[in-house]
Image 1 (tube, rainbow, N blue to C red):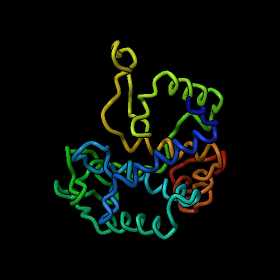
Image 2 (cartoon, helix red, strand yellow):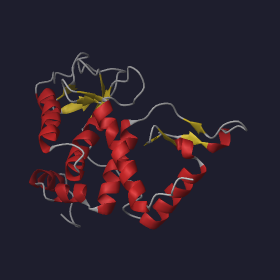
Image 3 (cartoon, rainbow, N blue to C red):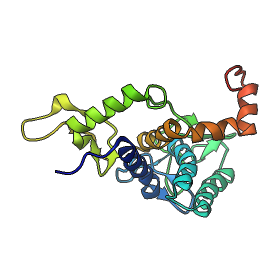
Image 4 (tube, helix red, strand yellow):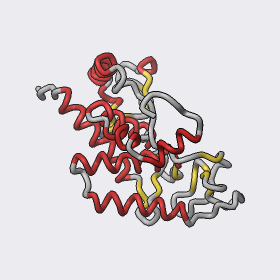
Length: 218
């Protein structure tokens, strides 16, 4: 019987596997990241944001070089900088906002998607209630190991749809949003790296204050 991994060992494994999504789903020519691993999936602006936030984590852990992380980040940022911002049906965005779903190659809006922003953080339970959240995660993985397909969390599963000859129903493919949350919130739980980078960025602080946010670490 295989040895049961320690909590730290399992966190390491899950975090690195989740980061692997951003390597697999990348268009290196423009830095765009596919929304899901499903065939012909468009780019999601939110998932690009998670990738940009995950690259520093990968550098800290030695999963990629700093130079590689810089190249990938600049590819995306320069592509967006020079993208069509006219707001037309063929555009990438409008006045600094981007259509949420874009063609992976041309960055033209698809699915009549709405304007959005590049997300750089998401809430998850692990940093805020680690004992409860980790106990629940461990228990779910023990009871329903099929929810971790190809070593990455599936976007959803439903044990009530299980049959006698198979495990719980698991959605096909993987979603970049889910993998980004795993990478970032495990890191915030362990080192608070993403939160520290955000607090130390004067552009973020200035933007939040101009938006009316006060108190706390601001």
